[in-house]
Image 1: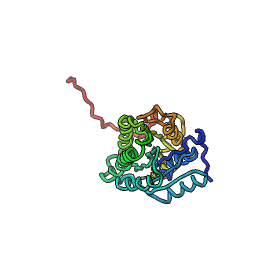
Image 2: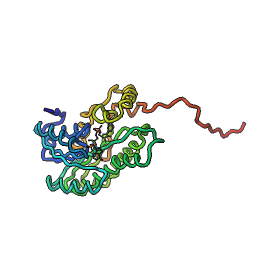
Image 3: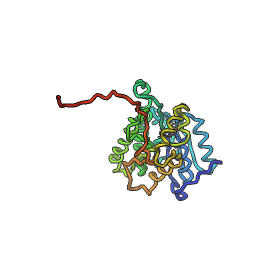
Image 4: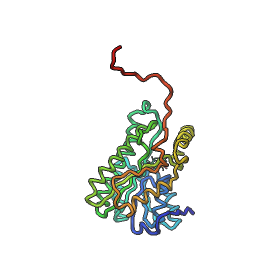
Amino acid sequence: MTKYNSIFRDNLFQDRTILVTGGGTGIGRAISHELASLGAHIIIASRKLEKLEATAKEITDAGGKCSIYTLNIRNEDAINAMFDEMLNDHKTIHGLVNNAGGQFPSPAENINQKGWHAVIETNLTGTFLMSKTAYNRALKQNQGNIVNIVAEMWNGFPGMVHTGAARAGVSNMTKTLAVEWAKDGVRVNAVAPGVIHGHGITQYDPAFVESYVKMASADIPLKRMGTESEIASAVTFLLSPAAAYITGETLKVDGASSLWRKTWVIDNHQNSAKFDGFED
Ligand SMILES: NC(=O)c1ccc[n+]([C@@H]2O[C@H](COP(=O)([O-])OP(=O)(O)OC[C@H]3O[C@@H](n4cnc5c(N)ncnc54)[C@H](OP(=O)(O)O)[C@@H]3O)[C@@H](O)[C@H]2O)c1
């Protein structure tokens, strides 16, 4: 049995229903386990039923409450249909964790329009559509709140320009929605994970993972990758009443890697044109 030991107090989320997108795997799975262990009824949604079923079984076997819905967050009609079904089953939700996301590594010059759009639609548009729908259909009625998972993109995101742009967009959107929806007591925050050891990283090509992890870990001031639980506890804090006065914030959970880490090797070159306004 998969038991989750949260640092937070028992029953913190009693009588709360929280929707976690991409909750079947990785960081989303850890968030779902932690919130369920604190009494929340967890709803997990993503495209692949088998991932959702496996995590729901783990949570219910451990005594938690979990429901599942298949969903592609890129499709507004599918989101509305899923909310129809979910609100019919559960009346409302009190929280939304926009965790679903994905991207592929590539130098910027090789990304075509289709690949660019796919990553922007999942990570930026999908997060917006989920937030808007959850706000309109549930959260504004019960002072619920939202946490968005973004990424470490503070110095750009060399090697994944599409996701860097999308996540910077979500971080900015987090501020806008926090201000617009403050009138209803709806808080909107984000968590920016650094390099997290877990399911997500196994989705990439092993050669990429090996070089990326080696380079990333060497430069992280805390000298290790983060755990999925370390992201889950930050999300749990932001969803909880302990964060009642925090909104519009993006919390970095990255072992200070954003202050220090090199993410891209720049080959030696002499291609930088100089400017000198003086004429000899
Ligand atoms: N791991 C890291 O180092 C790291 C660092 C920074 C940020 N992040 C971000 O953290 C989040 C979780 O990542 P992870 O590492 O836990 O990876 P993961 O295990 O691959 O999780 C991604 C989840 O998103 C779901 N998903 C993807 N596209 C979707 C779509 N169009 N509609 C609905 N669900 C979708 C996937 O489920 P289905 O396939 O069933 O749809 C999957 O469960 C992602 O946004 C990721 O980019 C991760």
